[in-house]
Length: 106
Image (tube, rainbow, N blue to C red; front, side):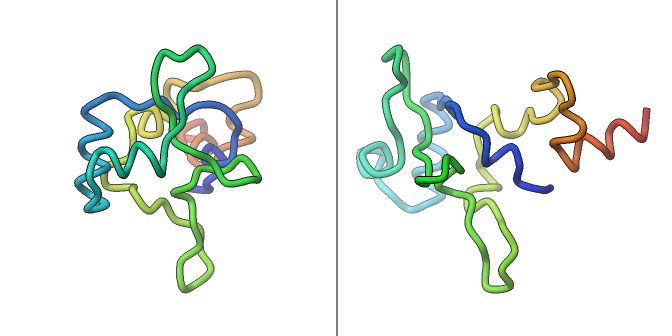
């Protein structure tokens, strides 16, 4: 909702099926997607989405109305879909607009 989760540093780890879905969605070959939009994690255990120089996800962009959107929202990785439900940490609800809404419902 607010895109804060898309600005946090760290990995957005990808599964093979997510790589397939995102590649197809972007109309790219798997090799082109991997070579241009991912990086190997430091522990060399998998691939993560690349980031802009400010640490935000490369798929977080401003649309024509200057509103930030996720270019791959329809096929975003499960890690992204799980936010904020499985990412809760101290003060998480103050960092996440969606989290504040969830907190109010409880």
